[in-house]
Length: 349
Ligand SMILES: *Cc1c(COP(=O)(O)O)cnc(C)c1O
Ligand code: SF4
Image (tube, rainbow, N blue to C red; front, side, top):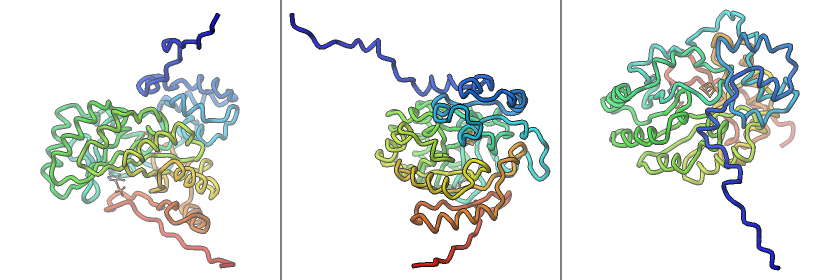
């Protein structure tokens, strides 16, 4: 009797989770996060209290990159609600960037020359505890069709605008159909040259970079830039590297922005490893942001001098293109504000 190669019924293979499923299945209950990571539950009541103010939300694939039993994990600290968030911090506000004053039509922020930011989707796949939008009125900024027409009219009527930044929330929380439609409408505006997408999705739900997504990103006359958001090298596993490579090899410029966060990435080793890991994945570091002074995030703050010293240390060990620009936001400034730094003098050539 001959043996036949076993035939595998594809229906019996586990189908990889779609991005929509991953987005729907995020961890929302603090208790579940504690169980998944076998954390000591003494801080669970505080996590529950803080999550009332700003909900816990974290994709399972991101949880899988955390170390079990480690309350100090740099990925966990970005998402775990803490009692400290509820302490009132003088000097921290609900709208630290003064964005509510630069919101001429719902869902559009025009703060800097030549570029506007569109809030395409109020929601995110992940809720980062330090987020400067944690108090932004999302509900007023989840544009429907008529708001979208208002945004497009605003851009059409101002020929000084060359670049549109799709932002949020996370713009990639919206469907590819909606995004493709929007990009087509934008590309029809002659004075626009550049489409930029600000998204944490390629890092937190890497399967979001589907072929349909690459299709609308590349089938446009606009030059496209994707700015992802990653704060620690441990966020970049093989799946993230693959998603960034898909973007890069489709011809999209891929940059990263990082927030300087106490206890997470405020040391030269972490930042150097992050830059190197990003480059290996096809992305270049763009900005290193000092924390926006948003109420509830004070415990993440790193003194500006420490940020300056960290950049000096990075310059002494990395090629220039792997050193991000250290910036802060100041309400009323015409750009992000560079934080200047010195260089260290060599004790040998
Ligand atoms: C950060 C930001 C931009 C983009 O600034 P770049 O320096 O070009 O990256 C545009 N609009 C708003 C409101 C921003 O916060
Ligand atoms: S992904 Fe960005 S916008 Fe969304 S919560 Fe995190 S920092 Fe905020």
